[in-house]
Image (cartoon, rainbow, N blue to C red; front, side, top):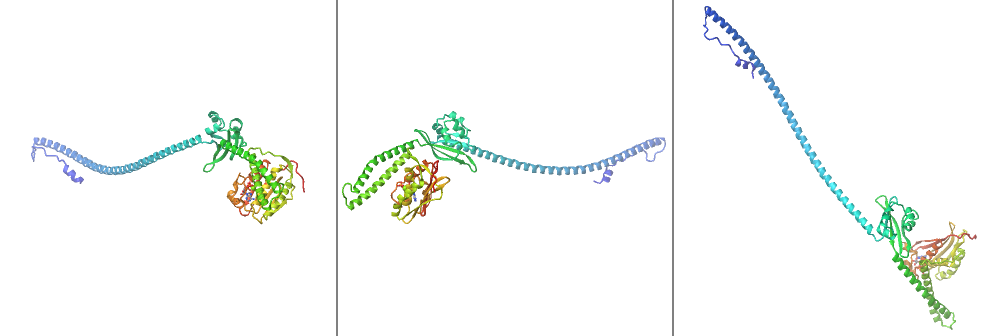
Length: 478
Ligand code: ATP
Ligand code: MG
């Protein structure tokens, strides 16, 4: 608004006093004039005041305008600020909402995770209970030793087998196998380990006629490390009883058969030798075959008797100091003819070593050497070779029988030395045989403190060797 025009519009002017003559004379005139003058002066003062007031008003107006402008500017600034703040509040609100949403999502995810974990915990718990139930109700005795070889768990069957009550068994938790050997019913079991927990396989533990067990232990591995060792005790009392009955039956049958078969042998011999009168060539041929079959039967019965003796633990020995070279040489001479009939060459070699004397049951050791030579002859085709050697290894006497025969198939080699086992290729080559020879041989060698082993390749040949420890006073021979 224009400031000047506003002042003009609002200006106030002093009016001429009423009743005053236009051209006044006299005193009354003077007095009236005076009064007029005063009125004029009042008027002027008023005018001045009015002007001043107008000016003040104008100033005020101006100030008001300035203020209005300032207020407008401030209002604008404040509006802008408010708008900015509003926007910021909106942004913040949005952010906050987002955050709330995110945290809600996280909460949900966390809840889900917790639920999953709870589920997993429950399942693990169930698995643990299942495993425990299996262990508790397992038909064999079980004991678990942790990674530090301390007893961690014993199942009821184990407690039953070794006559330990629950309370006592709890007190054993945390003990090592050596401690068990000292103090508890587990002592016979712990003694099998010779003081240190290790893997063993099917070791027999005889507690009494009514308690025979087979003990195995195996290391249990986790993903990376060993978690512990599991001991399994299997009750074989019944099997042992059946086996004993079988052995007794075979023993009785073999004994019963031996007498009539020996009688047949001597009768046949007498007829063949002409002691009971002359016989024709044809009769002699038939009787010779019968005699040989009878001999095989005698051998079989002897083998069976030997096996039953071994199994009954009464494989008694008539121990003497002997020279193995002499024994082996003698047997090579016996088998020379048999080998020659099969067009095989028997080679004997003694190494340059000094062969120490041994303490052996000569008859039994002869059985071993004979069986090895017989096998080499039986399982080598005509034209082949058999090498028999005697030498010394680490102070022990070593005897080897090597052939260029049919060999033993790889997949059957772990069954050699078990009772009645004959490999498929051997059965095809040589129909006769009971599969008892090596079982007996191994038992005899081991009872003498020695060991027997073999190496073989199918189609190429086999070498069987055994070691016998020396007697206290070795024979010095050239
Ligand atoms: P027997 O009881 O009459 O001796 P056997 O010779 O069959 O019968 P073992 O001497 O115990 O029984 O031998 C067991 C099996 O081992 C044989 O049947 C054969 O399969 C295998 N075997 C043993 N020696 C040899 C060998 N030198 N070459 C190849 N196989 C062999
Ligand atoms: Mg044999």
